[in-house]
Image (tube, rainbow, N blue to C red; front, top):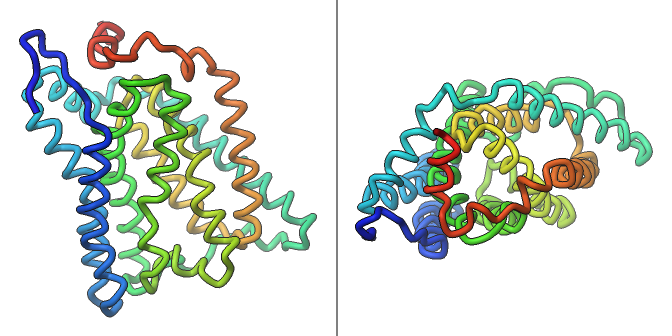
Amino acid sequence: MTTTKNDTYRYRPVLFFAYAYLFTWIFWIPAIFVSESISPLLMLLGLLAPAVVSTVFVMASGSDALKQDLKNKLIGFYKVKWLNVLWAVVIFALVIVSSIFLSLLLGQSLDQFSFTDDFSFTGVGIAGAFLTITLASIIEEVGWKGYCEDSIGNYMNWFWESMIFGVLWSFWHFPLIFIEGTYQAGLMVNPLYVVNFFLSGIPMGFVITWVYLVSDRSILACMVFHFFVNFLQEKIAMTPETKCVETIVITVVAAIIVVAKKDMFFETRHVGRLLEYSNVRQK
């Protein structure tokens, strides 16, 4: 991966996803067939793959601008618009509250307004589960925001980038539905729950892109938001039926965000020159 003399860089999203999927699934697929004492290690190695691939793509790019951009996104704490991150967390909390209230129409219980005693995945203990969702929030965002989303966004507006990323990010989790002890495997009791899990990743792709962009492409902002999403999803005692309702609610919220921020999602000023455009905005 080389650059021209003016340090322009040609993003390679197809190659990135090919490697990210390969080096994730090469660990996750064997985890299907081993015991729960071994599978967590394989799942962790697979979880690391997008971040490692992202970092390798940047460091091997030969582009000083791309390397500096990653550095800015990782340690540019001053860039984070904390009020925007807080609003994003509050909005997601309201999504959960609204989903639970709407689920009452389907015969669900108000008992969902409580915290669960355990996490949905087994074999690692409470401390291990908390560490897992923390690491997932950090590691995933290094991969997805370190290179992935920009590699798609460089070639199209952020609306279509969010759509494509949401689909590919969601499907990336596919082997987990066959690994005993994971949250995704627990959904296999009903095909509707499985379908809902994969569909829910699409509107979330729009929400997380919004969080990313309103903080000037800060990875830290996405890590914080991702952690709260993971934590609330795990600890609020929502039923699988309510999570199906939640997907509808988050889709409505994503649509509202797109309409409210249509210049952000549909502008094309950055297309073909994302690094240059981002550097100009930072000055």
